[in-house]
Length: 363
Ligand SMILES: Cc1cc2nc3c(=O)[nH]c(=O)nc-3n(C[C@H](O)[C@H](O)[C@H](O)COP(=O)(O)O)c2cc1C
Image (cartoon, rainbow, N blue to C red; front, side, top):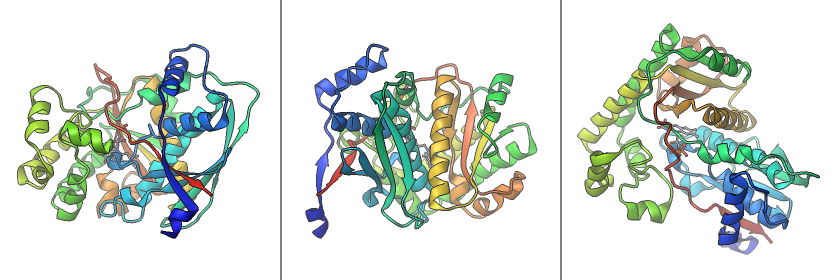
């Protein structure tokens, strides 16, 4: 209750004028964003919220400190203690949220600076962002890629990565490594994904946590605006209709649903060009947030190049794969993300929903 006195919870509402100005800049016209710093901040936070997060839990929150300074907080109501007991994926997701804001801010005439304010992964307050006015507004092209980025879960074409894309991967530095499916390391990752998923779906507590984030009906999806919808997991046509009409949270706990998850995962892991692995120096808060920021930069650039990407985290959530993966693929740093990559005929478009970001105001 004391918290209520310090912080007043307000929901971020994007008015029609605001939406119109975002659309305007996205379609290459003059950026007509409101000049008032708070409105720019509102838009920047909205772009932040388009970031990926594990299970689309969107476990982020913002606290306004001054008109040009915000804190990024973990929203404890939405963390995933079963699959992510150490908050590793939460911090990576917050990193992706931060990176979107860092990339969007210059489009609104603001230069961002990020500082990490804790060393404890269990803390709520993680980072501080300060925005300084810039003389000019950067090109808004990046906003289009932030909006178009999405996780692609359909099977990909079994074709080798192009030489240009392989070359482009190298520009991301030593913390990004690519393993083609045909290599020994690629085959290890493929099997790790399948076996770790098999183990994970057999765990009732983890499956229950996942069930709580399934939004089968349109009504529930529109109410919660988070989690995994039939569209979001790549279903279409009659299967999508069947699942959204007849499935409930209890269906996720059934044997047939668990078996189907393994079959789908196997098909995904067998149909791609290979896997990108992101590493970090260590598991500190700063390194995990930095990994999330690199992840988002990679995903946004991949979107511009129409390269399909799908994070597949089961081996990083299950033992023994989480402990052995670095050594098995010949890396001497902790692996933070495994990404299935490849080409698809139809790149699709974003379908997963977003809540309005919970914004607290310090008083
Ligand atoms: C840290 C992290 C881990 C993720 N792990 C998985 C995963 O194991 N399987 C999966 O299908 N998607 C995974 N995702 C993708 C999210 O489910 C996805 O970002 C979310 O549903 C929102 O959808 P969007 O990326 O299309 O916006 C992960 C994302 C993040 C940031």
